[in-house]
Length: 125
Image (cartoon, rainbow, N blue to C red; front, side, top):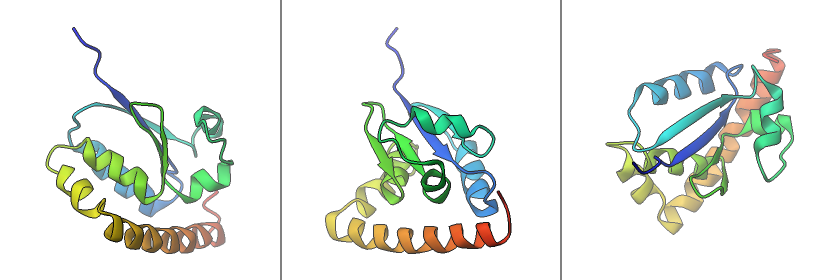
């Protein structure tokens, strides 16, 4: 029997917005195995990510290691999750188009930075 490909998702459950979004995504099915890694509960998980980001950057932005070992950050990480989620692959196809992807990355980065600052000001970690 062939091994089902696996992706690894690194997220921060100390952020209530991030936690709610990830918990909603966890309830959806997947076309592959997904390992959900909460860096708030286990800071050491950050060391598994090949690009070597620091803990604060992983707290600020979603990270995914895809089935080929590629590291994706922020909006691009969502594209990997959606690509592997039944009923959501269309999001990856549409929002992954070059011009749209660029705009979505910019919006995500602004939102993630603001959300990170808010979480820090609220002492969520």
